[in-house]
Image 1 (cartoon, rainbow, N blue to C red):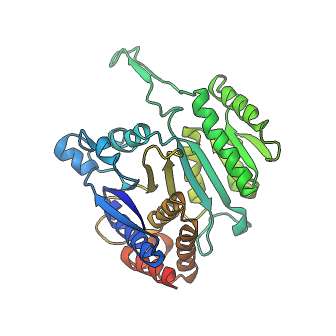
Image 2 (cartoon, helix red, strand yellow):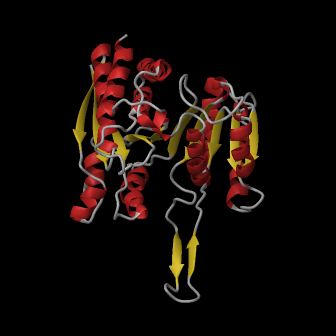
Length: 354
């Protein structure tokens, strides 16, 4: 029997509440399967840890995490801790140290999920976003000159390497070929005359090796409009770090909301652990009330199962989420229901049990 060691970092706010439901699902799936099991270790890292210790995680935190097969992250963010500290000193530190250069975000409208768009069929919203996750505008490169002087200047560099662009674009082509879907590249080559022209060039070069894959290229502003007006034109989508960060939240808005949005930060070569998370915030305003939607954290658990090679169980978990949505009896307030976090988790378990 395979044993997967999971480092659970619940983080702040509603993070612990939603991850508890996700781990319940993973444990139940492992029992039903009989082929694998999970060993979870919980780490109290995050903003509250920062307020007590001056760090988001211990100095040897990365070394500790190296011994795990996957990381399951809740949410980070807390009043009194600047967002750039909570992001850079935990989430981005993990991504960069473990070369999690691929962010995989499904944008899929499940049956029973609300959609704000008129005259759009459910089947039209079914995208797989493959976002470059290690460089671009989030590379941390730049300078701050003449601080607190009238001529103060801030420079934020966008870093685009051939290796970084080519590996994410090639992964996207392989995904599109495997799934027999079109591939769309989203950039801004008309205005960003170095980085995005370079991106477009590499997309063309790699694309020449995949003549069987239908391709499209859109400017990011046009793509934003099409995601709202004609989402059915998108299948697999590949884009840069910043554009992917923004567009996938738009994708969440048209496919049920942030309570249904999950993401995987992958090291495809499996040299380091990958990280799975609901991508919503810590929601301190509802923390402790037991009303946070756990579906995104359960969807992230489904992604973890897929990554470990148990796609059959990953699909069963996703199907169970959809069945609970379609049933409509157990939904949290963000989906216009009155159920608690644990009641939704239990309802998902019931659907998995059959």
